[in-house]
Image 1 (cartoon, rainbow, N blue to C red):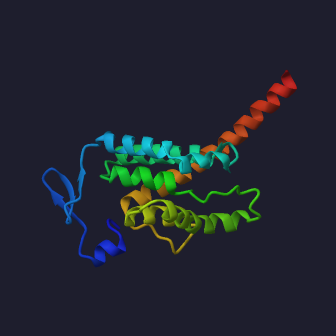
Image 2 (image 1 turned 120 degrees about the vertical axis):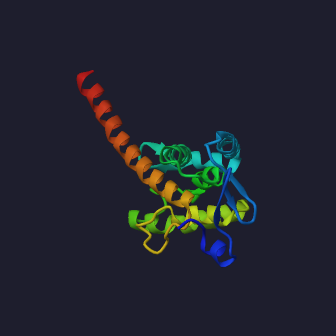
Image 3 (image 1 turned 90 degrees about the horizontal axis):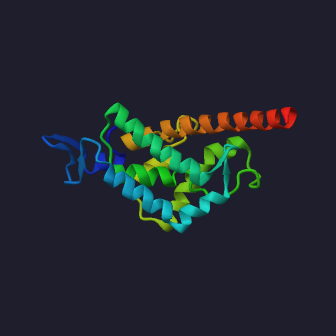
Amino acid sequence: MICSQSEREEGRGWVRRRKGLRMRDEETIQEGGDTAGFTETLESMKRDPRILAMREFPQHGSCNTYDHSVSVAEHAYLLAQLLHVQVDEQVLARGAMLHDFYLYNIQESGRSAWEHGTKHPEIALRNAEQFYELTERERDIIYSHMWPLTLTHIPHCRESVLISMADKYCALRERYLQGWYAMRYLKRRIVG
């Protein structure tokens, strides 16, 4: 889907224009990959104390939630460029940084892996709504980033699909790195 349910209900959506894609409400999204909007938004989010607090929570064994979110943002943006998908770069950066804004240590939470996997998008959305004014697309990104594990939380915009894909890639990569670091550690201990 190209626009969210509320945008469809309000009669808004994407229309093709000569110099890019433009929302019917005149919100412009430029074609051509102007990185200024993405980079500025990402850097601003990275300096936010509430976002920096995510450094305290381990994620996928080899990193923390903050580093994982930065990696997801960068990979989602790269994926958009590689696939020539026009996105709202600010929404992409904010959504990526907030997609795992659940603010707890998974190991210490007492939740099973399944429970965490299926429930943390709702927790992250609730936390993000407490501290930030979110757009519909940002809500959709946070709520649907675990699809298809969360079967009913289907992505409704391009940014959500890209972040969901980047999240899966980064999680697999981080799990793989965990094994690689463990092997390197053992090799050093054994070989000397």
